[in-house]
Image (cartoon, rainbow, N blue to C red; front, top):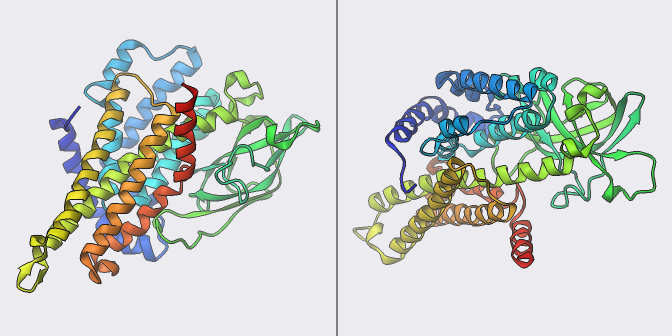
Amino acid sequence: MFEWSEEQLMVQEAMRRFIEAEVVPNIDDLEHNGVPPFDIIRKMYATFGMDQMARDRFKKQLERKISGQEESAEERAERAGDGGAAAMTLIPIIELCRYCPGIVTSMGVSVGLAAGTIMKQGTPAQMERWGLDLLTAEKVGSWAITEPNSGSDALGGMTTTARRDGDGYILNGNKTWITNGPYADTIVLYAKLDDGSDTPIRNRQVLTFILEKGMEGLEQSKPFRKMGLNSSPTGELFLTDVRVGPEHLLGETEDERSGSGRDSAKGNFVTERAGLAAMSLGLIEQCLQLSIQYAKDRVLWGTPIGDFQLIQLKLAKMEVARLNVQNLVFRHIEMSAAGKSLSLAEASAMKLYSAQAASEVAMEAVQLMGGNGYTADYRVEQLARDAKVYQIYAGTDEIQITHIAKDLLRR
């Protein structure tokens, strides 16, 4: 794949019209006035029939889960097409990130991570009770793994515990940097099993639970004040003797053969990191477009600054970054169409380069515009703040490097 198909370009154009009508006029409310993005996400789902598509997809997944049958080769081929589901998923991400990356972060965590985890490892009853409302964006989901003292060491350093209590569990602990945490209706939460043994907590089994807003002992904090990505609410979760029944344990079993909490988390890391390349592409495209127009319009010493070689160098480097990240996105789409998945090292390499490229391009756009670029009116200021978190969440640059290197050394 080296370019978008005609059908994909039509979807892209329709998405751009929606964003211009529904997102752009509300950016200031989302960024500065504490308005959460969920109503816009729901409107987008309704406008493009994404809610109905989610219901249709849910029905097929549920039927397969009940019957125990895998997706057929014919179904995979029909879904893949010339880039298929991956392309249609990534196009809205790219276009939204040209203006408001926070919407994508909130949507990705709710629909991709929270709903995705339930749909992959939940029982049919759990899929029906919690999965469908998340997939259609009717409810808000969060995915809670990070803790105050275990950011990059998310699994090993986890101290939130689940202690057996009759046929259920008692949960205690603290989660932080939880996207959608302040507003989440449904929370997919990871905890260490406290079985009373002498096993060091670092090595204990990780279980996954599904929690609901309003549970006794569950406190959801107010949104954090952050450097960027303000359109995506982030907060903390506090658990004090939260009692859950066995139906809240994902898969309703501690048997790791049915999918451990550790494997679930690692699988989501791959998905999250690959999607970040699409987010980076949208942000880079917008910064480049704004910079080109500014270089044409801004005149110094009687000459458009685009005629100066130092400005041309900045634009050229932005275009190189755009092409490289776009090629990574296209490769991911082709692999998905062929039914292949990225390894953790490949996803980490993709995320590392894309995140760095997005942050560098955004800061260069600010520099190119000088004092104007430092003001909110020119929008690259917001995109530069938003881009920085790409190098932090879903695994810092430093963590991506270790994953890539360890994989190379194992070969």
